Image (cartoon, rainbow, N blue to C red):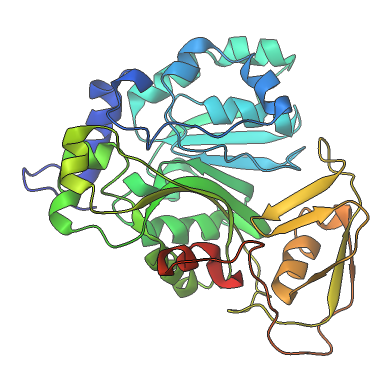
Length: 356
């Protein structure tokens, strides 16, 4: 836990910013912590059932809700007022479970206040939601056991953590084998100078705590996660003149990323001659399945894939929606696994994980 110059810890800075200074999205100085992505129609219908106070006091930079959640146990890191928890609550169904962890009591009080009403709206006879106060760097504090979670989501929160490596270590401790981390966050194209990290406004606005994308890759590699995938990425603009003057020299990106807890992943994409065929049976995805920004599977169409992609489809909850032809018995060298649109700059080349 880092300490700022005035003696306050990073946790205290974030708790003060989101518990007292910011009361709604209108109080934010930038759009870094505001969702601008379009939600799928099924998600929009669920959001229409969620209390207005939950929505207006929720802060996020993406839409990190993956498919195939029915009956699963989902953990939302930094759940805030619980918008994504309640969205996932509807998607996992009454037999699933969604746990929301946050360190800010003011945010959790809003989430808990509306729990009975939300369960009534969803038609559930008993709650499938559990809000817990704790720190995402220490999920033991929230009672999250090893290998107990199917899917972890997070929406523009990990950048606020002081010890990112500890956060990701905890994530992959509690994920089940084959489980998925699917999160949206702010990343930077270079390392943030230490004096900017000590600015409480820049930190609270999800800017000066942002991870340099290559350091993110290095952290995952250190803890044994050798491949991750970028689902979406967009550059962020800083519209507040004072904020831009202080940190405008740094390029920021809002990214949605997925990573799986799989021992079979390699540090580059390797070619084993494998083919993946999507059945079109995922709910609300009859025509295509998007794994990442350069793997879009058209229903019924065979697609050559690298060994890592085959593992992500064959050794996870997605297995029943795909047929994988071939195995790793014959190796044909590196797999040419690149985005459809070629990258044009060094900065863009850092955006694709080990599969780009």
